[in-house]
Image 1 (cartoon, chains in turn brown, yellow):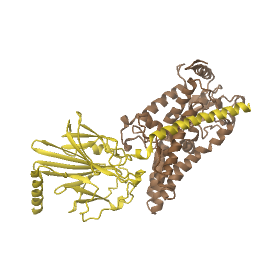
Image 2: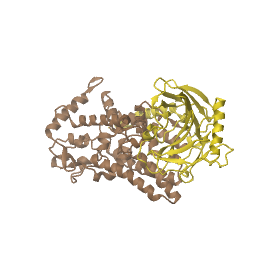
Image 3: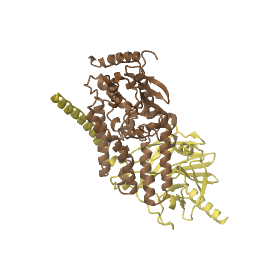
Image 4: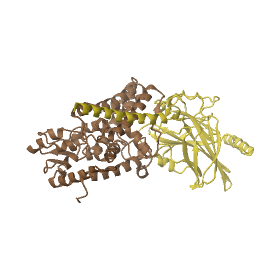
Length: 339
Length: 278
């Protein structure tokens, strides 16, 4: 690899291409829903974006819970058909997920890319960054992604389909997702920025959506990946991470105990990458497979990102020195002059 | 034989009168005089009984016309027109847009009525682009594009259509837009044959929420003489109340800014506490 290219830069390029393709790619794949690549993408690419190339899997999952399974249970028929269609959606998701595993988060997701750009903007504006969130806070926040998945993606839509909850709660995660606002705004469509007064449920959800988007932008300037930490897609990935072909492997050495650079580099504050000395598989539920831990590991082959059994990125002392130097130089330069 | 002669005489009288008040067109508004009971339509809700009961349509000025439904796969099924002009369209089992197609070809006249109707069923695997792009008749009014699945035509919103005659764009072609709310607007295609329509804001008694407002219909109608034949085509579709009546973009923007400022304040609070502890 040429000296000026590093894994992070490569990842940014992949993210940029993915962002452009997913946000504007209907010119290539086609305009209508059935033209899209999968309708079950393992990343937050939104159907409300009229120019999108594919939809995220959370949309059809909510629809299936609401209109499919919920309605079938109430009607007392068609449950098998509804379950089959849900399994087809999950199956399509898994076919794609197996290829990249959680790297869909770190390399493909448009919302993840946007948050990384916010962090860069914050850093370049000279804003005082929070390198790592306190461990207690990280532990408290972690369950949120599971709650989002269980309640907003599966629970409420199913209850709406059963008639127990209001029909307005048929797709609650889509109603609050920041990617809906972001990707539609990126195409010049401001119709997704609204406060809905038609019902109390829609009002509450639209209020949460707007506040959450504002919070994400504010916090994204100061610390890394604020929304990713509570994203239900991250939780869904975590359920199936064992079957993905991309792995994160640790061959711990005694020096690891005193080091901890991997955890410091991690944008999701996964301390366990450093503290876990027993397991080889260190692909934790919060991991987005960004590869920064591997980049910033100073010991040869201690951390590796593998595709099946083939190492694709391995920790290397020479690379670490170069990478550390370029990171320090990058962080010194701001728009206000050198620090 | 007698029936077709009767229909021909009726049509000749209308033709001689020089003005066709009601062109061949689809509508979901069944006249009261119809013998078939109008189906109870719940305003703007998902009607899951549609598959079993079918949906009723009325073919205005449909005497002598033939009606078909085109599936997303381009398969065509003939539709029976009752004596009163009411047509019951049963679900085809396929998901996505279908085309309700009616045609009447007489000496010196070629009339066509089109309506793209979304139906539920198993995935057809075919893009609506296939249906929209397929040749239907000489004078075609094509949505460019058709509203994407789960999106709708709505008032005070722009929709684009293309008019073609034998696949050639019709430039500066007059088109009439008529809505079921009583609006009538004269329009014209541009020099590329495209018609950009802002659907009128003509709903009365607007309630808050999409499901509480029944959709209205708009019909685009155009006619042209070529080679001693009068071609007339109508395109009919539903349009809904614009959600801007209960969705405020200004308030949405303000709440985003509040979220942003709130986020900064929370961070400031957290930092000052950390400084105190330190």
